[in-house]
Amino acid sequence: MADGIKDKIAILGMGCTSFGERWEDDSSDLLIEAFLECITDAGIDKKDIQAAWLGNHFDEVNIGKGGCYLANTLHLPYIPVTRVENFCASGTEAFRGACYAVASGAYDIVFAAGVEKLKDVGYGGLPDSPFFGQLSRLLSPNATAPGMFAQLATSYSASHNVPMEKVKQALTHISWKSHQNGARNPRAHLRKEISEMQIADSPLVAYPLGLFDCCGVSDGAAMAIVTTPGLAKKLKPNQDLVKVKALQISVSSGEELLLNQWDGSGLLTTRQAARNAYIEAGVTDPRSEIGMLEVHDCFSISELVTLEDLQMSPPGKAPDDILDGFYDLDGQVPCQPDGGLKCFGHPIGASGLRMIYEIYNQLLRRWPEDRLVKNPKLGLTHNLGGVPPQNVSSVCILGL
Image 1 (tube, rainbow, N blue to C red):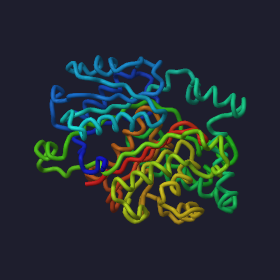
Image 2: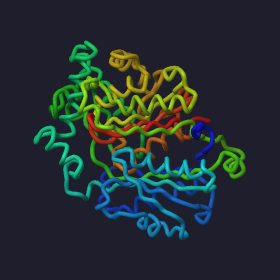
Image 3: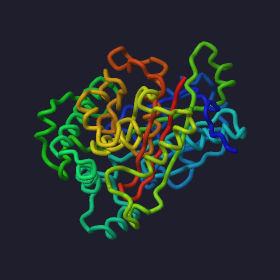
Image 4: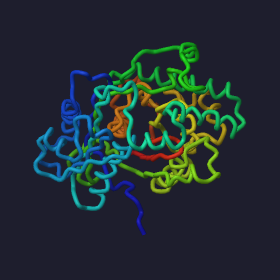
């Protein structure tokens, strides 16, 4: 029987660009910037890489359909390169391909990259796509991403009998916490501290979500080089090894739209991916065993419901934990220590690997003291792609 990939993969090195409005750079510049950090951190030569995976969602922006763009940009030595796309989980999907390739025994050292150049597409938000266009016409001609995620808040309030005012207070604290963390991060897109009053008084986008409840559009790239723990120990005998404890992806079958079991207060794909990841990692009590989180906060409400979908907070109790500071940087389980999508930024193909980059460096204690999580233990990353009724979720757990 399959037993997963727990402790079969070690991260040899990682790299990440600053995220933001990188008008002067194209995708190749971003890839090179991240690669130079990644290969230096890994301490190997480019010729040692045996295969590569590239995560990218909007292929019309510089990349194209196949893996040639990555191979050409980095002058890779005629190795197999596979481009993958899975909405906002595209970066994690690339990482999964690399990890499975090593775990299978097919390769010793493999490379995963994610990149997105969104500021050049001419849209204020994300560009349209056939999927979102068809879904919008099916559900409502006026459907928007903020509008559809906002419905999670009203459904959550009704399903758990939590007053909407308390939900809004929790959303405000989520955004405040992310801005506090992002202000400490030199690579984050948004680095200005703001007050909870500023957040609460910001212009409404889709009730109850205001301006500061929505993540921005960014450019960026992130990368990882993975290998076996045995080889990693030979190459880096004096460094702790960050190992993959679990890596799971769940994709909606459409049941949320077709049947009436879904109450709209969370994401079924996240719940399934989390259950599978905990089994793979041997985690029985996530709230006490997981030490830090990087979750998909495209909107503040997605962070709130994810905290319960991941079994970190009991059903209906996430607002209490949020307002009590449980997920603050100095709290029991810090969430978004790097600022999250909200402040670090969200170049779709890079976000999953950016989250892993943060957990990797936290576990190795590489950040300044004011950015370090107190007791990291295991770290968890979560991606959510698509929209609440039809989506993909990924959960990755890392540890020493």
